[in-house]
Amino acid sequence: MAKKPSRTRAAKSRTRATKRPRARRARAAGGDSQRAVEQFLYRQAEILDARRWDEWLGLFTADGRYWMPASEEQTTGDGVPNIFFEDLDLMKVRVGRLGHPRAWSQQPPNRTSHIVSNVVIEREDAKTGDIVVRSKFHVAEFRLDTLRHFLGRYRHHLKQTASGYKIALQRVDLVNAEGPFEYVLQYWL
Amino acid sequence: MLVRNEEFDVKGLVEPDRVHRACYVDPDVFEREIERIFHRTWIYVGHESQVKQPGDYYVAQIGRQPMVMVRGPDRRIHVLFNRCPHRGNMLVSARGGNIGEAFTCSYHSWRFNHDGSLASVPVGKGYDRTRFDKKNPEFSMKPAARTAAYRGFVFASLAEDGPDLVTFLGGAKQAFDDMCDRAPEGEVEIVPNCFRIIQKSNWKIFLENQLDAVHPSVTHESTGRAAADVENEMKSRGEAPPLSYHMLSAFLTPFEKWDALQTLGYPYGHCVLQGYMGLRPQDPDTLEYEAAMHKHYGKARTEEILNVNIHHVLVYPCLSVQSPLQQLRAVRPLAPDRTLTEIWHFRLKGAPEPIYRRALAYYYLVNSPSTMVNADDLHNFWKCHEGLRAQAQDWVSFHRNAGQDPVEGVVVTSVTGMSEAPMRNMFRAWAEYLA
Image (cartoon, rainbow over all chains, first blue to last red; front, side, top):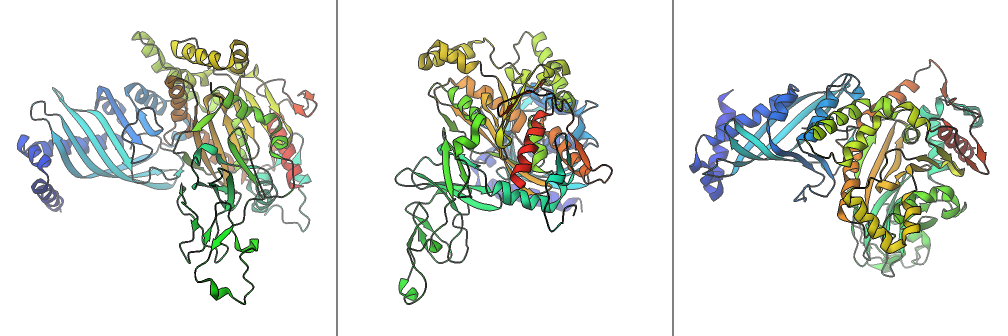
């Protein structure tokens, strides 16, 4: 069972590599990049599922941002309505709230399970090792006897640093970004 | 069913200082509300800037009725039922767009002008010697009985009779006056894309919360605390925290200060809660904005405009307007325990960009689907609604300062911002609507 998904992924990556010159360059820059970014994305998903907030904040560069546009057409989050548009300071507010004993809608806390897949390296800077990678996600959330599903696309702009990748920008496109929301999102997907 | 009498008697449900829980949870009461309130009074449809060009349309729900607002070639705005008179097909399916020369039905290609009148049917001879008559309004898109706009905000009523829009709005007009006057050019423009959030609770629970000055420091303590902590951290780094942090940490305002505020209650259920956030700091952005205001209005009028201090205006039953931050929430009841809110933001025409961004930050923090603020409100609304199903007590208490609030003509003021006067005012009107 464990082997099959990884073969599928490799096959996808090969197909794309033959079609896309950018992806070919990414492979040439280092065959380990694919595995390294995948591991990074999986770790980020685990951190969210485990609600390890200090580690979450540590995933971002000092000027990093988490951005969920209100519509797919948006090319910037600046100066327009967004579902999420948070720098580290705002993320700290959210973390502070989640840890407060009277964050009422966190009684009981919600629980999530992330699946990240279809990981495609869009470009990789051969000199700096910075990477742009897109992927798909499926998040199941359980809260107060209700199971909700969130699906969509991630696009990470990752900086290569001495302590590994850091997120300069994470764009999150929900497939139903414009749709009505049943209740709200308590924190990042 | 709590009220299934032959004679629907609403009088037994509303007393001056308390209301029966059936007002919130009973399906028959809800049906009556849709019929007597939402299908009769003026309901907010949208803003003129949503339909700038001839043919532009945007949909809206009035009670249970699917409506469409459309601009004609003569620039007039029409509000029509989104229904083909032929076989009932909705004429537009997207939330907004442009119909071009005419509405064209996707089923049998009946075409309608922008005012809803029938333009053509294909192969018309099939209707020879039948009762079909192109001139008969039965074969046109039906317009709302009345459509009117106040300072660009379009309302419609499905009832022929009733007060005109300006009379109906009365003191609640200040929601739109305050919002538009704050624009150096005296107008606002809609920011595209509204947020839509479904609340698992009765629509009235939301309206009551908007005027409830006791709840912020209780419900939003966690967010207020967390924002204050980061605000302090920024200050210790030598940075000036953006005003948006203050908007959140203001939730820590102690009860005594909420007490100093005032509420106003108007006929038809409209209410106002005075502001508390102090939105007039003297930073360079504000000064630039005030300079732009001086240029358009002169100093005295500018002072008059900027000294208006409103937090929320409720335009009963369908709007909560936060005029100094140019946002509004339209309330669309879906079921006794399900309410859709459409949340819009507006741009002050002629105001410098940072003023828009300041309001946008509030829109994000309070009204986006990731809000840390309404997260706890919506949680309360759901808990309220579920609790009201319980048969423990039949009554909901609105006793705080009951009988103490000054009445000046048709306006009920309050002895304190925490008085439950707005809730009592809304239910007084509610009982009249339903009677």
